[in-house]
Amino acid sequence: AQKVTQAQTEISVVEKEDVTLDCVYETRDTTYYLFWYKQPPSGELVFLIRRNSFDEQNEISGRYSWNFQKSTSSFNFTITASQVVDSAVYFCALSGYGNKLVFGAGTILRVKS
Amino acid sequence: GAVVSQHPSRVICKSGTSVKIECRSLDFQATTMFWYRQFPKKSLMLMATSNEGSKATYEQGVEKDKFLINHASLTLSTLTVTSAHPEDSSFYICSARDRRATTTDTQYFGPGTRLTVL
Image 1 (cartoon, rainbow over the protein chains, first blue to last red):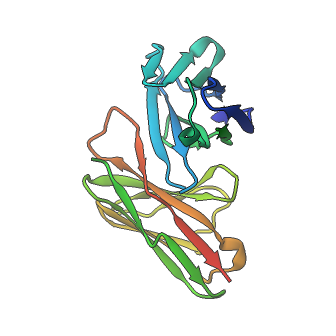
Image 2 (cartoon, one colour):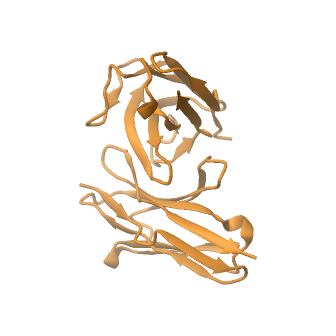
């Protein structure tokens, strides 16, 4: 069975701090995709990144960066110099055989000014 | 590109009535659409997978007679909550997968529909 664990239920930081959101996954599939989504208070899910299981290169997009390590089954997400607008719920998700998305429980990020 | 819309965004109905929620892919064709349910402060739970022209596949524990799904075209899927009760109040989100995306697996999400049953 596939499973995504986001152990951090809620994180509070002060603006300009760096913050890392953890994601650990379980799957028996050799080919799979990992995702991060942002859900602001409006409720709409915003796609942030997709990574396939064969690409372990880390990625940076502006203040966002992702660290994918198959050895530890982790796909962590770091926001550098956080801003109040980053406040949201962040979901890590996994898609494997059958193409169903399995979501983690989500991490609430609160960035205070 | 890859925009998915949902209508209505919010709906309040009386207990016992039925509510239909539409999910449309606006700029791409989607052979597969997914329906999720999200309770307050909880994660998204997949309810069913909707394939164009065929019956939906429901996840374990989801009542197919309660949540009717129709995927009549490559751009439209509907979810009907029949005989709604207060416990059906929730945030319903649909997603769609681009039929051209055979090598990737990105689902594009709609903005969600907040259902409140009185």
